[in-house]
Every structure is written in structure tokens, then in C-alpha cells.
Length: 73
Image 1 (cartoon, helix red, strand yellow):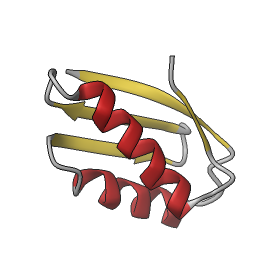
Image 2 (cartoon, helix red, strand yellow):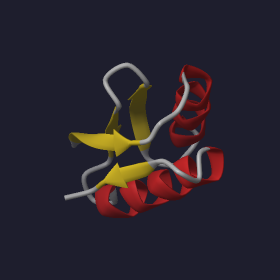
Image 3 (cartoon, one colour):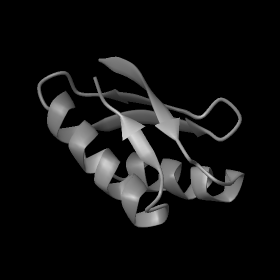
């Protein structure tokens, strides 16, 4: 499964790169991109564990940029 999420208050490209690296290390993630310019995060991961992986990705983002909010719908 592949989904894109909106980010709010992502402050810099360096933080986006750190978030992307952290998400890619999560077990089950096939690919991830975090774009500072478009303020979006795209995750491609195992279908069976997708919701759990998204929760872990949000936690990883908060560790890098505590003020950044991931809009999960």
C-alpha cells in the first residue's frame, strides 16, 4: 500500500531528510519520501501492517521535529 500524508509546520529540508531516513528504518517500509517543499510524506509499506507502520512513522517524525504535525485521515 502507498499513501501520502500532509505535513504541517515542517521547518527545514534537513529535518525532512532525517524523518525520511528514520521512516525507512521501520520494519515493513518499502519506501518513504518526505518533501519539505510540498510539505508531504509518502509511505509505501506492507498492507497488513500499514496502520501500525503509519503510527510508528508519526512517532519518528515527532522525534525529529516535535512541532511538525502529520495529518492522518
